[in-house]
Length: 80
Image (cartoon, rainbow, N blue to C red; front, side, top):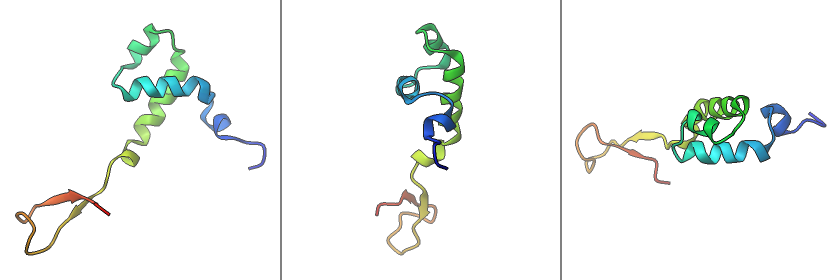
C-alpha cells in the first residue's frame, strides 16, 4: 500500500527494534533488557515477532530414502 512502510506495520522504528533484536538473539531475556533501559512495549513487540517467526530460521528436515542412508530414521537438513 502506498505510503505504508514496514516500520508502520511493526509499530516501532528499526532504530529502536534493531538493538533489541540484537540482544535477544544473543540470549538475553526481556527482563535483562528492561534493566538496560529498553522500553517494555518495544521489547514485547520485538520478542513476539521473533518468537512467531522462529521457524523461518530453521532448515527443514528431509528424510533420506536410499540404500546408503544411515538407518531407517536418518534425517538431515536440506543441503542444496
